[in-house]
Amino acid sequence: MSLIVAGRFTTFPAAEAGAEKLFSRGFVEEDVNLFFVNPGGQHDRGHSIASREHLPVTTSPHLSRNVAAGAVAGAVVGVVIFGGLSASFPIVVIAAGIGAWLGAWVGKSASQQRAADHHERVLREMRTSGVLLSVHVTAETQAAAAEALREAGAADLERASGHWQGGHWADFDPTHTPEPYGGASQQQA
Image 1 (tube, rainbow, N blue to C red):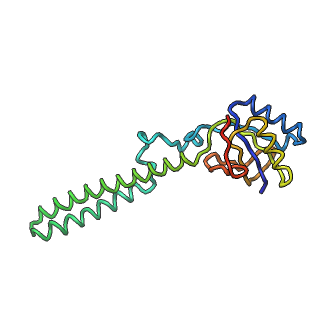
Image 2 (image 1 turned 135 degrees about the horizontal axis):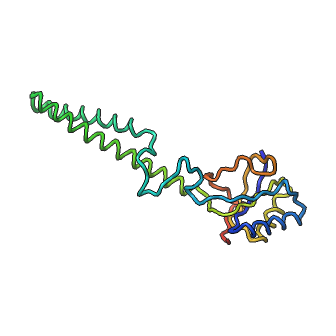
Image 3 (image 1 turned 60 degrees about the vertical axis):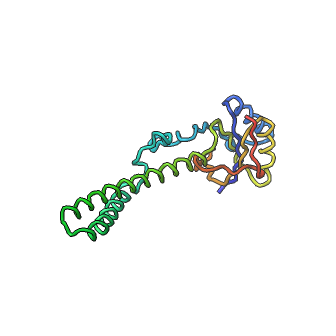
């Protein structure tokens, strides 16, 4: 694992100026990388997270299981309640059907709510979009990198432990909540 310090810029020219500041302080090109981080919810278009109003029911992997469990439980409750009141077969069948329908509806609603809650949590955890200038550092050079990034106008300075390969942060995850550098986040840009 490598130690990485990064800062967010609003434009590529601003990030490039930050990179020049790092180079002037002795950092080499293979230890500096900049890339754009998409706005929240656009990190993986294959599993796109829609707005809460348009959140598809299928985002819950347990939807069919919840609907089926709700239907079975509702049918049993319907039979127990109405079957005890009447021994009439048609009434028991109708009660089981109504119970199953209500149980399936409750199961579907629970799945939708769980999916909506997951959606909200994911959006809260995502980082702010912009150009991220990342620097592969050592314990001795991290403070100098952070200072250069601050001077260049970086916002949301962060520190990470990750894999630095081929001149870039190889295991960067835009959905991972960043760890602010120095314990406090800056909001300049």
